[in-house]
Length: 300
Image (cartoon, rainbow, N blue to C red; front, side):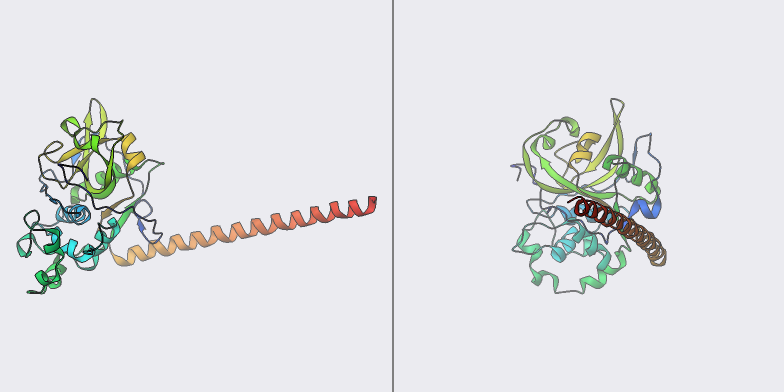
């Protein structure tokens, strides 16, 4: 972990084919040509010395769409075990969909200011029905932001642009590098080498620097680093380093199920065609083998 900017707590994600695809549901979308920020007034939070980057990044994305400040501590106590370091980013997304999130003013603990152990201590969450309080801020659905023409960079900025009016930001992560921490003005260099650890963060917009588009990243380490808590990542770094990205989008359940059924039917058709082609190919090979075998026997 970095000696000053405290980051980390992201486990390497696994591929889950059950994730809903943003591209398949909403289409590819346009690539933005101007600078934009889905929520320029977003609250910059500080995870302190904890491994709570997943709760902080996912809660910040949910908070963009809600009126009050929300509590990442509530999500942390839901998904992080006292004896296990960090969490996988999808677990944070699921918690916001399954439980919701309490408001910051309702939280019995606040980071920084209390220890990791205090946040994860169940005794601190017994005085109220916090799940009932959280339910009013439930997310309906999260979508995986697939690569667009092989580019994570284009997929992320296209999805942000598509939903900018609804203030829908994106949560993702990467192995963080020390050179990123101390990047001048938060502008991440294209060359780096000193790995720190897995870290989750929020993507909230696009900014052109010297005529080149960069993604605007909001971190969870306060405002003393980067550009007051913001970093700017170039295409090359995003495409090579970023883990899968996700976005909360509240859509009708029936529509999602209908899209899923259509995709499943198409997949079945492809599989059936593939089986037919394999069968035909195998039959041709067997026939050719028989002819060659007969020739060999006849000539012997």
